[in-house]
Amino acid sequence: MQKILYIITFVLLTGCTSRIFIKNGISTNNLGDGGFISKNPCGPPCFFGITPGITTDKDISYLLNVLPDVITNCKEYDFTSEGGKNGLICDYIDITYRNNIVDVIGFSPSKNITIQQVIDSYGNPDLVDIDIISLPDKPYTTGMVLYFDRIQTILLPPDQKGRKFTIDEDTRIISIGYLTNNEYLETRGIEGHIPWRGYGTYYSYLR
Image 1 (cartoon, rainbow, N blue to C red):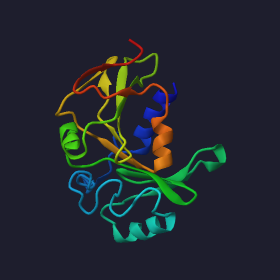
Image 2 (image 1 turned 120 degrees about the vertical axis):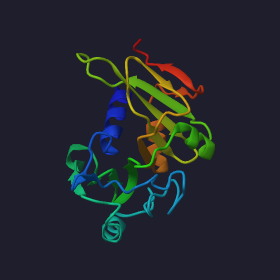
Image 3 (image 1 turned 60 degrees about the vertical axis):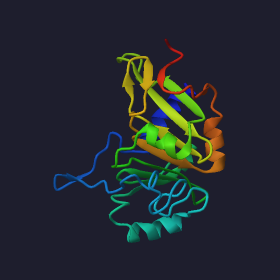
Image 4 (image 1 turned 180 degrees about the vertical axis):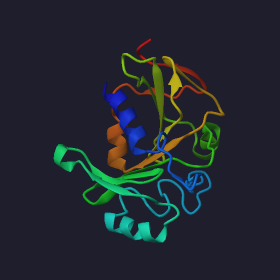
């Protein structure tokens, strides 16, 4: 259950897999690959000058002004009184803070990124998480999370129908998350991850 909740939370926080901001009938996602493959203007764990563990909430306030075409339509949230986090939900970008320092930044690239491009750039994933994320009374939907230790990054491809998940070289990446070392290790430590076994079909433990 903890893993399932994490996948759902990550999809929500990296926003934008289901939330599309339209202005004058045109999508305004200007992120490109967010620098993930191109490293322009910077590469992981840096996103347009935002780096988990370094960038402060005051830095974010400045970047909101200097990157108006990138970081758009942001709303603050604060669940710290309930044991949660605070941060910003923007179009295609979500940011969480710990002690006023960015600890997670997630984004949905507008440019198509495949898992093979990721592997060519950063090597194979270290771990995979595969879980059913649909409600019990709904048709099964399975989600996958890919963990890359060297860059402390979590990637999500689109969910798939059924109790299994098939990944190949053309599988798209729709959400990317950069985490601080502590946040990454905490997430990576959730019980039930399995080693990357290459392309093919992975099954949920609920078969």
